[in-house]
Image 1: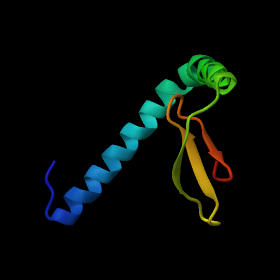
Image 2: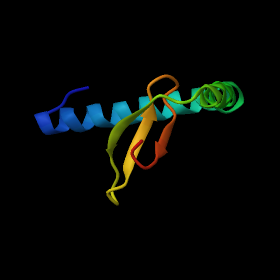
Image 3: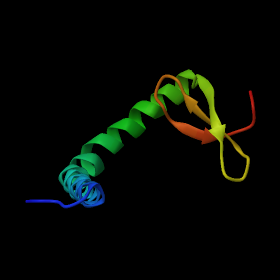
Image 4: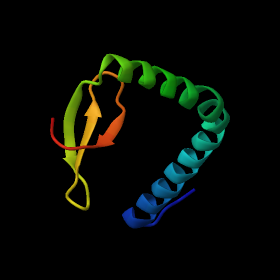
Length: 81
Protein backbone atom coordinates (compact mmCIF):
# COMPACT_ATOMS: atom_id res chain seq x y z
CA UNK A 1 0.00 0.00 0.00
CA UNK A 2 1.29 3.45 -0.88
CA UNK A 3 0.23 6.78 0.60
CA UNK A 4 0.88 10.11 -1.10
CA UNK A 5 0.64 12.40 1.92
CA UNK A 6 1.00 12.54 5.69
CA UNK A 7 -2.73 13.25 5.85
CA UNK A 8 -3.45 9.96 4.05
CA UNK A 9 -1.11 8.08 6.39
CA UNK A 10 -2.74 9.65 9.46
CA UNK A 11 -6.22 8.76 8.18
CA UNK A 12 -5.15 5.17 7.49
CA UNK A 13 -3.75 4.87 11.02
CA UNK A 14 -7.00 6.24 12.53
CA UNK A 15 -9.08 3.76 10.50
CA UNK A 16 -6.81 0.88 11.52
CA UNK A 17 -6.94 1.90 15.21
CA UNK A 18 -10.75 2.09 15.07
CA UNK A 19 -10.92 -1.39 13.51
CA UNK A 20 -8.62 -2.70 16.26
CA UNK A 21 -10.68 -1.08 19.02
CA UNK A 22 -13.90 -2.51 17.56
CA UNK A 23 -12.40 -6.01 17.28
CA UNK A 24 -11.11 -5.94 20.86
CA UNK A 25 -14.48 -4.76 22.18
CA UNK A 26 -16.23 -7.59 20.33
CA UNK A 27 -13.78 -10.20 21.63
CA UNK A 28 -14.10 -8.95 25.22
CA UNK A 29 -17.90 -8.49 25.26
CA UNK A 30 -18.81 -11.94 26.66
CA UNK A 31 -15.91 -12.00 29.13
CA UNK A 32 -16.79 -8.55 30.43
CA UNK A 33 -20.54 -9.12 30.77
CA UNK A 34 -20.37 -12.68 32.12
CA UNK A 35 -17.25 -12.55 34.28
CA UNK A 36 -15.43 -9.24 34.71
CA UNK A 37 -18.27 -6.84 35.59
CA UNK A 38 -20.21 -9.22 37.88
CA UNK A 39 -17.03 -10.00 39.82
CA UNK A 40 -15.96 -6.36 39.90
CA UNK A 41 -19.38 -5.32 41.31
CA UNK A 42 -19.05 -8.00 44.00
CA UNK A 43 -15.56 -6.84 44.96
CA UNK A 44 -16.67 -3.20 44.98
CA UNK A 45 -19.60 -4.18 47.22
CA UNK A 46 -17.17 -5.70 49.70
CA UNK A 47 -15.07 -2.53 49.57
CA UNK A 48 -18.23 -0.53 50.29
CA UNK A 49 -18.86 -2.62 53.41
CA UNK A 50 -15.35 -1.77 54.62
CA UNK A 51 -15.81 1.88 53.64
CA UNK A 52 -14.56 3.30 50.37
CA UNK A 53 -11.44 5.50 50.45
CA UNK A 54 -12.75 8.41 48.36
CA UNK A 55 -10.50 10.77 46.43
CA UNK A 56 -11.54 13.74 44.31
CA UNK A 57 -11.31 13.04 40.59
CA UNK A 58 -12.72 16.01 38.67
CA UNK A 59 -15.68 18.32 38.21
CA UNK A 60 -18.29 17.04 35.78
CA UNK A 61 -19.94 19.03 32.98
CA UNK A 62 -22.54 20.42 35.40
CA UNK A 63 -19.81 21.35 37.91
CA UNK A 64 -20.66 18.37 40.12
CA UNK A 65 -17.75 16.80 42.07
CA UNK A 66 -16.77 13.28 40.96
CA UNK A 67 -14.90 11.01 43.34
CA UNK A 68 -13.34 7.56 42.97
CA UNK A 69 -12.37 4.96 45.53
CA UNK A 70 -8.58 4.62 45.72
CA UNK A 71 -8.97 0.92 46.52
CA UNK A 72 -11.60 -0.52 44.13
CA UNK A 73 -11.92 2.41 41.65
CA UNK A 74 -15.71 2.73 41.90
CA UNK A 75 -16.86 6.23 40.92
CA UNK A 76 -19.47 8.49 42.44
CA UNK A 77 -20.84 12.02 42.29
CA UNK A 78 -20.90 13.06 45.93
CA UNK A 79 -20.57 15.94 48.33
CA UNK A 80 -17.12 16.55 49.73
CA UNK A 81 -16.42 14.39 52.80
